[in-house]
Picture (cartoon, rainbow, N blue to C red):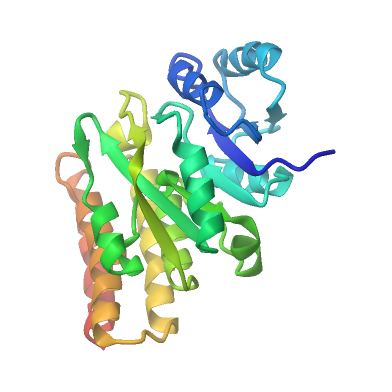
Length: 279
């Protein structure tokens, strides 16, 4: 079989009503030599039926059905194992991308021989600031994982995968691990990933106790990385603490999203770990 230039990996769970824009943008990509890997995470709606409808008109789409619900991290890792492209993108099926997104990232990552190529990230009519910060120092890459293309060999050689025991925030752990291993991230300004926050998404929901515990586990992963990694400069260490730990801690502790008891759990975590921030 001919190997595609890029593998697009989509973790799919109960997104039947939200997939049209992403698949329309994938069909319209200027780079046609791609494969689209859909990993259904045991959906209970018509997600599988919808994917099969898309498959009828696009032979590049493949579908893998998981026997039970594992979470987005497991689904992304599973898709990575099934991928054939030298480069991969991890997209979410309820968002969408510019029509030249994959082609421009592919040209960038191949021409510069980088580990990662990153595009802009847009929510509504606003661009997030992470993209501009990454130009200054790749350690700022603590969010927007879907806005990038990755060299698959680089990911596998360094065991950069999504943690499968973290329900929410596994993408943040993935990026923390990535920035501590990469030597080269390049950016591109003239194409964009469009994030759509829908009512049922994890980011839009009030955090349950289970999800708060998952956030703490996410932070534990990052603290372990902080303790084990030897940063080139103290400034680099501070950037990692700020953008990969404290920002995610503050996001989780939003009183509108968690109960008072869960807030106290997170504060206890912070007090336990505070010495590591200044060590």
